[in-house]
Amino acid sequence: MRKLFLLAIVLFYSCHSSKKEDKQPLKKQPRKEKVVYIEAPYFKAVKNNDVALGKPTAGQWLDMHKEKGQSFEQFMNSKHIVPTKDSNIIYVKPIGNFTDLQKKQIKLLREYLAIFFQLETKIAEKASNDIIPNNARRISTEGHEQFLAGYILDDILKEEKPEKRIALMGLTEVDLYPKPEWNYVFGLASYSQKIGVSSIYRLQDGKLTEENFNLCLSRLLKICSHEIGHMFGLHHCVEVNCAMNGTNSLVETDTKVIRLCSVCQRKLNSGINYDNNKRLTELAAFFQRNNLKDELQLMEKDLKSIQ
Ligand SMILES: [Zn+2]
Ligand SMILES: [Zn+2]
Figure 1 (cartoon, rainbow, N blue to C red):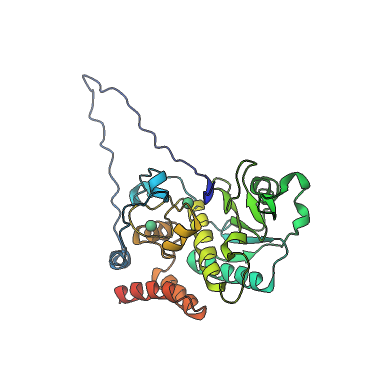
Figure 2 (cartoon, rainbow, N blue to C red):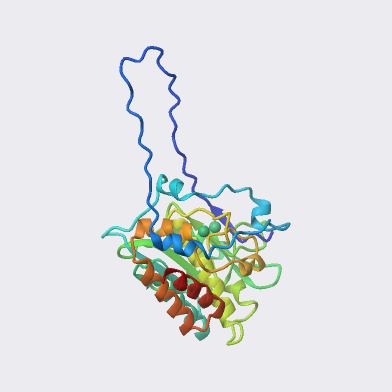
């Protein structure tokens, strides 16, 4: 099965009481005020660069999953975490023996997440592959070793509570599988626990080299920011091309942009409360430094819109 992520999606239920109306009300019930959120000019400006999604083709995420999306108002009415003084650091935890190029990807991922979420982001203590017991490993039908993703979530990451942790993303170089009948999985997450694990194995098309470095990096940045975005309460985006679009395969991931659409940016900003212009400027500088041209172009368009 070629599913991108086995998602532990957290569903938020809104409770509507369905009391029957009194026939002779003694006094008028106060009407519940609808909260109106004022959209800051920044979001109105970058909305011009949101690109509508076309009709999904066979096998794409929205073809397989009939999702309704999540409006800004629905997000505001949902339970979601916001940073506090005791919980405000994102951690990336490497598990395995990484090559120098892979180590460079991890370093850049940390840097990117710090900019993307405008929160301090640290590399947690590296773990060796030896911490995975034999009953959580197997040799795949393709002949390489794989780790059981659920073991890493439940037995390693769940127990890991570094200082002021708000979210934790484990990263392996070994391929992952979610259950015996599945061939592989790109990652697995528990949004209620704010932990996830991703593997770099399939993002590098065999072997990470100088040539495919940027393609692999772009995928890693997209996937990790998407997963941590879920941890902050953002659901899949279904109307415009956005980093929060669900994807069913690496091919589909490659068709999605790294940019958060205006609505998803507004959701993220409402909880983390950062300076939008600063974030955008830093994202553009990051893409420029790392020669990610398409990504830079998207940020430049947004920068132009807010001038
Ligand atoms: Zn997702
Ligand atoms: Zn979006």
